[in-house]
Image 1 (cartoon, rainbow, N blue to C red):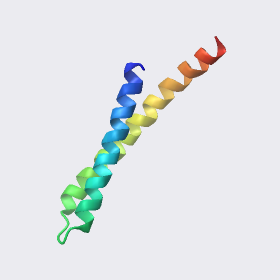
Image 2 (tube, rainbow, N blue to C red; image 1 turned 120 degrees about the vertical axis):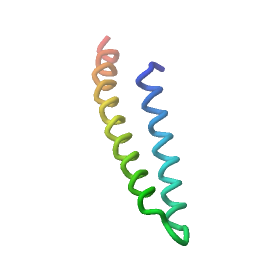
Image 3 (cartoon, rainbow, N blue to C red; image 1 turned 135 degrees about the vertical axis):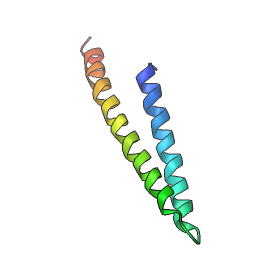
Length: 67
């Protein structure tokens, strides 16, 4: 597994952890809206990074399959 694949897996794990925190905040009696916004922005940023990494990995995958 190369560095980009490791980074992608780490970001995916982080997204799942943040989503769990969002669910806990939403279920709380007095949800912190600023924290919810921050977590949503974190998810959005991480998803963009995951997509960019995937774009870089796809050509490499195709190249290896052609070899």
